[in-house]
Length: 432
Ligand code: ATP
Ligand code: MG
Image (tube, rainbow, N blue to C red; front, side):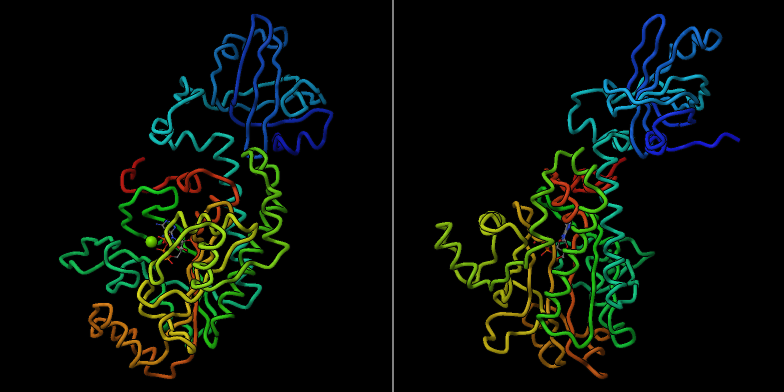
């Protein structure tokens, strides 16, 4: 049996006979020679076929098109003119899968690439992003496990809502109508802290986002955590350490990919090395007024444009805390010093990438949380199972949710969140 090396491994051996396999990334030929750039998951390499060595197979080799799958054996050597500095002089070829004319060529529209997403995944751009994505998921697991968290899973079919009804997807659940897809795990996570104390998950969340922004998907991967006994500062500290860990992992493992993406990775270094900027909502309004000449009325949520101006002043994420009670969810604790604001925080990523984490300290008093539910127009009787968390040994606790694609968009320097996931789902796009 032939022992195949990855293209990268073959280049690392740098000379001698190698066997490699992959897909044709580019090809050009003449009567006597065929040049093929071969691609596998590790890299690309130039391969040369001389007609004199392949008289019998030549007509087939000559017809090979982009994306055909082939196995090659031959001599590898350094060649400064080749795209990745090496070339294989082919001695043997097996054509494993021929390719029709590949629909994707240069300069195709965003729409065309979206329609052909299943093929576009093979591009160097998407391959690089998907590798970074894999690092990000691994780093999230690594971080939480290293801090003693248990991985815990909540249902996707849910019968209560947490983040506001307008973004719910209802599903046909047999003959039932009051079933939704999860927007967050939170109401089903809080009951579990009484068993496990520190829990996390990475799971899809669904939001019927009607706005077309560069940072909203209808299906996204949500890394969430919940911790018993935690105070508000603990929640912010976990978030900061998590993001530092993710960015550090990407810088360690994916510089090559960031370069393929044209991402200036030096801009990510301060996030790993410096403390994040923490400020209250009220301080943020003051800074916006003084440094950005933007006036925001106290009590209004920050808009994208205001968040962008604010983060542009710093090279690390900004943790904005203590928002007005009315713009935040019912479960956030009031600030003991000022009941007009709540102990909730948004982490805003640098370079205009917007909110990547939303978190809070959770109200643990039964009567207060019922009051807040009613204030927000909810019916507390629908939340009985959740209110039990406040009836039997309630403790201070808190948690946050991180949008994984938002983080990938930021670290990769992407224009749109749609490229941070293989098959993006938005209001308009649910195929292929
Ligand atoms: P936004 O104001 O940007 O819509 P949000 O306040 O609705 O965010 P949360 O409910 O706090 O967000 O959700 C937690 C995290 O999930 C957010 O910080 C963000 O990173 C991510 N997130 C929220 N909605 C989406 C979405 N539609 N697509 C991708 N990620 C999202
Ligand atoms: Mg939202």
